Length: 375
Image 1: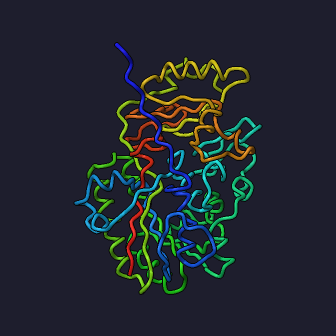
Image 2 (image 1 turned 45 degrees about the vertical axis):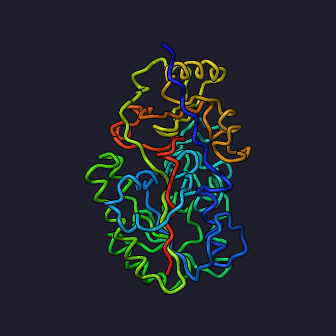
């Protein structure tokens, strides 16, 4: 019997309809001199509502749980690769592609140091990682501030001052707010003081990871987001615009490949980075070809397994990758499709126990909504 034909990777639409194209277009809508790739209309004030994990296909599948958002016209953007929170937040914060800003995964090698850096938790063995050095690109918020716009970021207090926040949101005034009601109220007040506000909500993603997207808890969180969007829209001053978007979508896993139970997949591997749907495999000197062959054979029909050079040339990280970031990418890059994930039950027990995952190059994970609501 012939093996099923593998699907084609759904490469992000960098430069035309990707998350990297949104920040500049938002700035242009406020009258700042920058490109407007998405052709957004002028606005006196802008609120960006970022819903972690709200993929476009996920939203479309449950219009009844989100009647307000579903009633408004929306376009679809692509997240970027990997389709994960840290990468997408940095893309939104810089307006750059992953290959330009260098945040190419949740866990990446620190080039030349033989250690993994988790940029979500901002932890690594050994010396601490300086956010300004790891992600040196100026942020769009710094550009706003230089132009006289004081951007505000509304999110839980626990994120304030973290390494990831410092890397992504430099130039923002942080406004801590916890509950959905508190965040809506914070946006109301902020829109009276400034022309640009971002509000973040992460519990849709959390519910999807723990219980699976489309489940009861996930639908409850979607309904909360819908009501938040409606209330923010009601609070918009005349001439203002609300944009609702996400950082990635999600799939529910039904096929887990556990590398910690597969000695063959660990042969020649020094470090396993990335995440379950976008693995960076760092190999011992001289072992890259053997590891590539082993992983390709073991994951045939379940994942795209390519070399670093192939991933870069295919445009997965953008049109180009800065030379200094190449060492952050695995010697081998393994990207599952379908319902497959690559977990490590011993090294990453919590992550291995989840139901919902993201990071790959499939439409369910790449496609994100951009809902526009104006006063």
